[in-house]
Image (tube, rainbow, N blue to C red):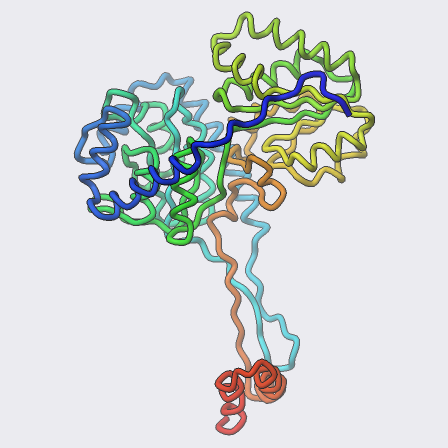
Length: 421
């Protein structure tokens, strides 16, 4: 392989300062609760509101600002996401009646978590699609209390009206105007106004990700997320204009985002580089997209599709596009957040409305986890029941194994049942 365009290394440093800053915020929220939340909201977002929970009147006001087309689009996308989440849940069934000893019954129950926190970033744009992606699968899983939070629009005391409407359409039970690391701390430990949750999901900036890392254990999380990324595998059959558009769609997220093309065609790679420059010229978000692409974008020339597969599996991208004539490589692609097959299947479809989730693992986390899905909010909990004959069958085995480990009380707990029952 060789690079037609190589990315700069990710900047190092600042991690220790960020860890310390987030640790202070978390401790402050734990100690001072809502008063600290209001101070941080005021400091970071210019939002001094003391009552953090969004009222029904505010939600109705958000709907009033939406056009009929905007509401129809949100509801249609929500329907796609909900139906896919419900189909996924249908694959997760309870197990009863399994027996490996006569008289024993083993199984498992699929149980939703009691509550979850869904963090929807504010950032440069209203990411209302993320509200759908987080809250809908939680409610499809059966979560009784889905708490949504997002920062206020800078200099105001309100969540962006499109995000607020999306949260309500998705089925949020409680909505709070709070963002950043302080929101994660409040969801994990609770304050006077916000009761703690069992699981926190959702993307965010580096401070939000660090807060999730530090609160993990006190609360469950989906995964640690970094800058957004897309990798496309393409041969000479791909249209360079489509690939350029997909690279820029990822690059406009923020200046740290990463677009990668892995191709077996040198002429395609060079055509994509040219098409990116042409499309940047008319792009409203060109300032961010150009900075991201020029710093972190890559075009890699692979010697073969087999090598392209190896590169993709090693990088384990958040989004993986495959536009090739020979699709026999698909089963060998195993490390990705979400897969998009064929030129007609835009990665942006998954971002908004196809039904799959766009909250996905980044920075190679796809080697060991998938994205947020209905199962993120479900626990698979085992159970067993023995009758007397089954107990007498297994207790001697357990006793011997316990003695072998030197755990005498464990052995006695098995032996006493043989003596008394």
